[in-house]
Amino acid sequence: MSTDYHAIAGQSLERLAALSDGVFAIAMTLLVLDLRVPVSTGIQLERDLWRALMPLAPHLVPYGLSFMTLGIFWIGQQTQLSSFANSNRTLTWIHLGFLLAVSLLPFSTGLLAEFFTFRSAVVIYWLNLLLLGLMLWWSIRYAWRAGLMKDTATSEQRLAQERRILNYQVLYAVSMLLCVVNPALSIAGLILLQISSILAPRLRLFSRR
Image (cartoon, rainbow, N blue to C red; front, top):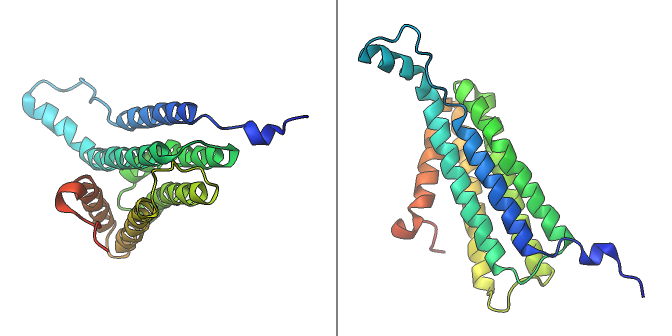
């Protein structure tokens, strides 16, 4: 009896996790390439160096924001992968779509750093966050429908993951809308949200119904 290729493709969670770790590592490394060491020409005193470093300030903020963002979404994906019993072709492609969004973050970060006073740059960055969240949400929903979860996984755990994704996506959208007033407010809002996500276990944010 012949075997359908699509029925056996994309079943390795280990390879998917390894690929994800590699893509995240590369994306995190690419972020720092936007921070360039000042040219030494004309720098003779300490104050000259500090003056030369000042133009990096607009790049440091998006760098910190995006590094936190990648860390948060890496944890989110690893949480999902650890709750899957196995994978299939569709789930693998969903996560490849998620990694596509990860690989785009250095670009949207560079755009935001270069044009941080432009609303369009904020909107494009937010669309990147939206794509990341949608792919993770789709992943957990599909895995439950397809019976790919571990026996120990509970519906409460699924709801907790979905609720966290949706809550933050709503707040990301609110932060993006602040760019109507001032793009800097949007960036500040996103930074505060990412900090709150990192401190959530301690502050218990979004853990209550």
